[in-house]
Length: 568
Image (cartoon, rainbow, N blue to C red; front, side, top):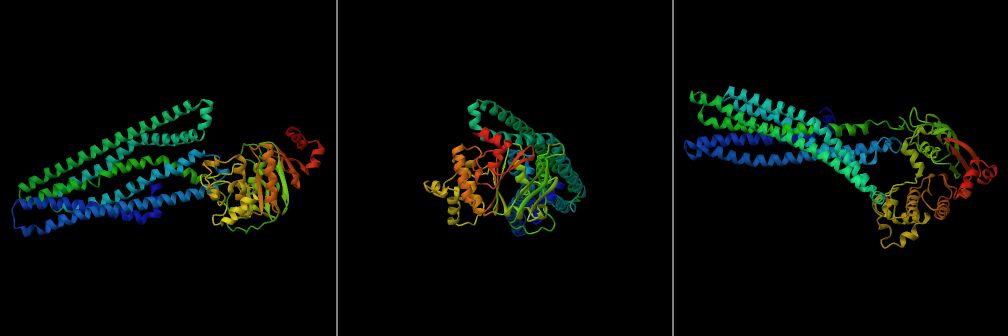
């Protein structure tokens, strides 16, 4: 509850309005039944009709007010809940932005999807149904006591005891009964989403390899576990609801039991007997949602813990208190050391390189040699353990991360294409770009001719992760996006990965033409297009083992020459 209150505090006005509207609803219902009881009892004595006019009007007004306040309570509670969830999602996305990409290694993509969608949505009903009802119930109890106490103090005391049992003991019992099933349901729901996403993403491979049946069986087992946990939750909720209903009946009977003798003894007006009994019954409308609210609160324990893990995950880098404005200039690593854990091997071990404005440098080496770690260090995706990464002679730690990434851009080998149009994917770099600018970026990436030949042109949808495009076309869309952004310094991370040699060579020719005049760091394990670079650095096991121009490196007969021989 404490965590939920902290979460809901920014929307406290909306929740307070919801609680007040809920109390007004309960008060209207309480007044409606109490007045109706009085009206029926009084009418049985056949007084002049004018004596009943006020009660008749009150019954009509309270009936209409109850419906109106209920509507207002629903609107206020759901408005506050939805706004709170929007705030939470925004906060989580901003946190993920600071964690990406290096800080997201601890999370699976499907699991992150579950946290951002399922876990956040799990809080919606709790915010609407667990925070405001307790406050409304307390106010309703005070109102009921105020109505019953003047008529019969023993009846008021009995009602308070029944209210305490129904509003505190039964909800606590419901929470205790829901603890195990709620945790099991949350875990099963998260696992089911992960299995479903992985099954859908790998459906073609699973069918081709004959493993689709096993994957479906795993999904079925997880779904059955979720259903079992759901049934256990439903049973406990039904038992508590039944107990609350039974308790309300017992409370009404108890109030009658202590009030009837008072009526017989002449201490209480008999006309008020039905008023007291129905007021006691109406008061339990405030108790009914409390057990469900506390059970839902228990169900949010695991989602809150999972969301908290995102918010408390350590960020790989942090912005300085007073950042320096980043401007284009020389970008360098000076004796850079980097590893991804205290016991992990060094991903970078004393790497030094310098990118002068307009210079092209290639970083080559086998997979795992530390090339991508260089890109992460130069773009402030990851901080160094030792050494320095500098821009214009200043340590990158003195710049805000966003400022660095406005100067240094990365065109990654796995650049994500969203399931939207080609134009929208290119505009991701600059959402306000005009069509002419998008076309120019596509032309420089040698993509315009292909797009112009499509029936819908730039409005052609690319499918999930660009599935409707070839590997080369996806790379060209990513390159056009990078060109549209206008980065002065560009890091190309494996731009020819997964392409055949002819396509890779043609793509690199287009890349060098498109990036003419820019500072470029090309990271690759392939050797197409290296004749256009000013210097080649060969990496192995986190170290730069060779450097020089391609022709000179090939004459030395070292690592670069061996890579050339293997590629031949």
